[in-house]
Amino acid sequence: MTLGAFGKLLLGTAATLATVALPSAAIAQDASPAAATTAPAAPASERPRNVIFIIVDDLRFDGLGFLQPGIKTPNIDRLAAGGSYFPNTRVTSSLCSPSRATILTGMTARNHGVVDNNNSSEEGLTFFPKYLQGQGYQTAFFGKWHMGSDTADPRPGFDKWLSFKGQGSYYPNTGIPEAQFAKGVVHTLNVDGKEVPQKGYITDELTDYAVDWLSKERDPKKPFFLYLSHKAVHSDPLPPPRYAHQYDDFQFKLPASAANTPENYEGKPRWVYEQRNTWHGIDFFYNSNMPMTEYLKYYYATLSAVDDSVGRIMQYLKKAGLEKDTLVVFTSDNGFQVGEHGLIDKRNAYESSVKVPLVMYEPGTVPAGVVNTGAIRNLDFAPTFLDLAGAQKPAQFEGKSAWPLITGKVAAKDWKAPDFTYEYYWEWTFPQTPGTFAIQRGNLKYIQYYGVYDIDELYDVAADPDEMHNLAEDPQYLQTKIEMRQALYDQLANRDGKHLIPYTQRLSTGAVRRDRSGTGAAPFPDQWLVEPNRQDRIDQILPDSKAKQAAHERSANLSPSPIVGQGTNSVEYGEKSLPKAAKRRK
Image 1 (spheres, helix red, strand yellow):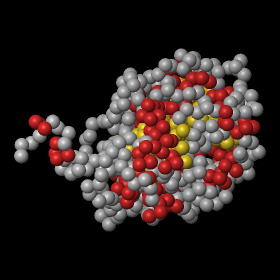
Image 2 (image 1 turned 180 degrees about the vertical axis):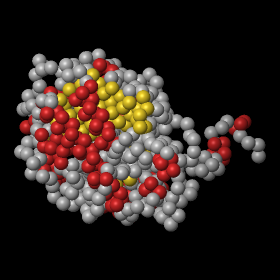
Image 3 (image 1 turned 45 degrees about the vertical axis):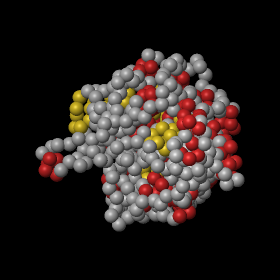
């Protein structure tokens, strides 16, 4: 399938923002995942390849020009045209800090312990660039770290370091009162342990530092790994002046499931409807009344600066003659919803939350113009980078090297991807989304929730990519649901074989406000509404099984249980089983 064909298929779903047909002819080359299998991998005798890993924040899976007409990302589009696009890329925790920790450690959140954005500890963690240093690589980090203590101090594993505290700021004076700014107060960057003032627009300044390191500071005799971690396009996205009005006249469209209709909420958990009027709901997102169609103008204009950054990096590689020796990777730390099911942001296990864009480029090594449908997780990045550098996979790594898939040595159809297992641990700061666990095996995705009074979900994401038809109570999928529940539980065990729910210290009530005139609570599901004193009252507690399903189909009970004092649950009935001497005196 070509990028053009895939884009048309993608844009035919309700999950997309625009309804125009697809991308530039420059990308729609006659290539396919099958064709990619014939492309030779780079010879082992070559010198170690360089890697530039570019990660953005909160970019949705289809938020690029070659996937969504009207969006302007010409430099990233050229990467896709000359490299491979991987549409089945997902993150095992759709949240900034846990996802970044997974990428850097090669471990899942239950094992690396960075479970939310609230100051989880980095103690005892080893970041994969440390292993690359052992292979003779020079390593550099530029941008958003956003893990562990709220500090921008250098981390082990990097020869060059530039970061900032927390989310950072788009401009040197963003959020700084005018009076303080007039006195010279600006945000700072940590450059190799030294605090220096932020001088410019953050995306541009990060790129300045990165290009300067590439062209002037590094040792040209050694291979390098550059980790360029942009703040963009995280909320609240502010574009540079040159793009401030880029989308003024563009009309964004929201997914069909953003509408508040009974059809859109049929089969959905209650929490989904109740999140509609919250910080992460389409009606009151970030507690503002800005329409999402307006917000997206800021979002994609901010992305344009990232696209410029990619162009500058590629220009340097060509000028330095390094284009064929350098793997360029472009991705995001998590997805982003713009109204799907009435939700915005990320955190949950729906496709627009867990799917991320992934483009890889290296002429002669990564097949050009190909849509590679093999499944990749952010958990797989670290082992992949070590594999291509010739380093051994550490024992604690939980992912799988995707290098054979990326180079075409293994065809997408033959790629044996592990189950995609998802974990999100409830955060007190944003309590709208419950603890969420999910597993995808092939095209079937099962989702369950922790600590909330609600239903679970099961979707065929191939037949139902917008996840509109919950199959969890479909009798035909009973055995599948039982098996996936068991697999999910097994895979969520930590390295010690334990099932634990980690959490961080609560410091406030979190973002709990709702629009006073907005939507209220969701009704209970109709199947939950029953008359009192039913004989089958404990059947819902008993494990699902074919026997239970068969009993209910014939309107019987798996385990009849009258209320206390009635029928078989009465003293009178129990007395019949006692010896006469033990019976009550008359």
